[in-house]
Amino acid sequence: MEQIEFLVKGSTPEPYEITFLKNGDSLTAICTCPAGTFGNLCKHRVAILDGDTAAIVSENADKAPVVREWLVGTDVEAALKEMRDANWPAESAKDALAAAKRKLARAMNS
Image 1 (cartoon, rainbow, N blue to C red):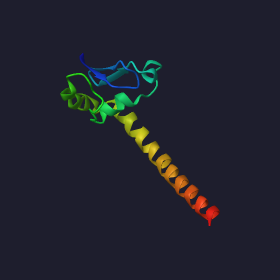
Image 2: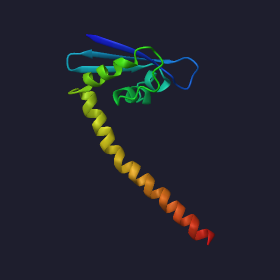
Image 3: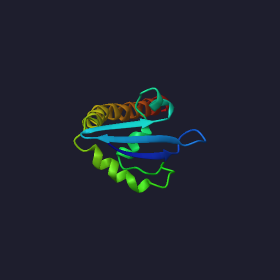
Image 4: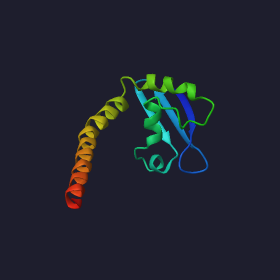
């Protein structure tokens, strides 16, 4: 089993700890943020999986590409793709709703 840990800046003064564990074809990601603690999706893990190291405050941000390599071929990679595919229509709908609200506001103000 391989393990990489990061400290990331979050919404609290103390950084959150993220642990990535690679065991064969299995990838586990644990975060100490409130969402991660309750087993929910957290943006900190996804950011590192996306290669975004901006929030990493530990001295090992250079290890993030290794975690991205671990992602390939795992169920986490498949689930991340599924989430993104499902999110695209939602984002498009939000954009359309915002445009419709602006149009309504202009119509009501003219």
